[in-house]
Length: 164
Image 1 (cartoon, rainbow, N blue to C red):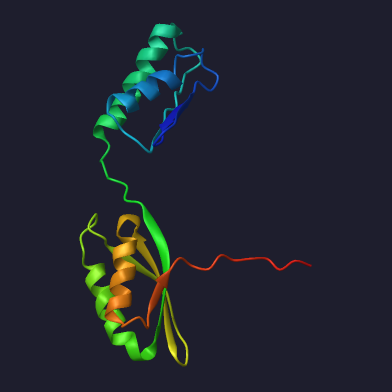
Image 2: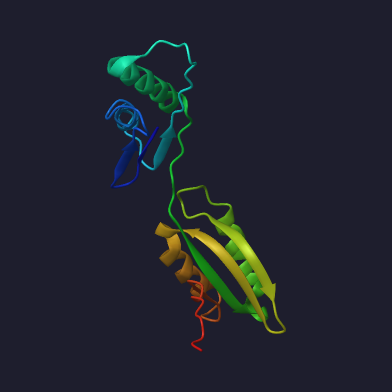
């Protein structure tokens, strides 16, 4: 049985248990902790000779298990990110590398970035980046300024299929 809460939506499933006795208590546990972007799965193992719990017992069992998990689980803020491709002539490589290194050292939430794939050609440097979405415009402006407009940071080109 499971429940999840997204940014704007929530769902739950009783997965074979009587209606409202499993998914809803799990969902209540998540919502009670005011969590978003969280999923909780509770698996109940029942021995053949175990007594029947009844609706009240199921509500308490699933709700209690879910509450124990969501209270004990570590919290981590989710920071939205965007992919960028940075292209520059090799003559600007030093400026661009200094700027990227500066942004890599920024704390999470302040505009940090992560390097992805790096490529060198005869005359250009291409770097894939993952940048915090809230800082993309600021990063793009700094790339342009630090390279006197010779470097460009933009979303990666969409792959297109040629028509036959």
